Image (tube, rainbow, N blue to C red; front, side):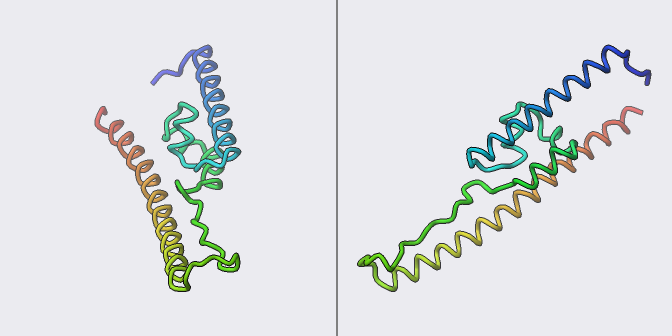
Length: 135
């Protein structure tokens, strides 16, 4: 394969820099506003592909560091010391429900992360297969 002319290489590098800047800005905005951070959310906000984010080591590290599941804010049970007429049984069930919700959130987070990794690997394998088929 012949190398690209210098002006096309420069244009490609500039396009990549703009996309990286949009992705960093989108990530910062998601973190600042407290919205859930994921590869999909950053890609959507920055108008880039998730593949682009997965293949950029710096962006990937930043997104993984800030990754949060959707709806990760745990439910706050009622404070029994406020003189609430809530019975002990209702408080116990509320606490149990909160623990179950947290466990489900953690499981969903783990599964989403595994799915994102699998999708990235799948895309990479498809591209590699495509290169081998054209030979």
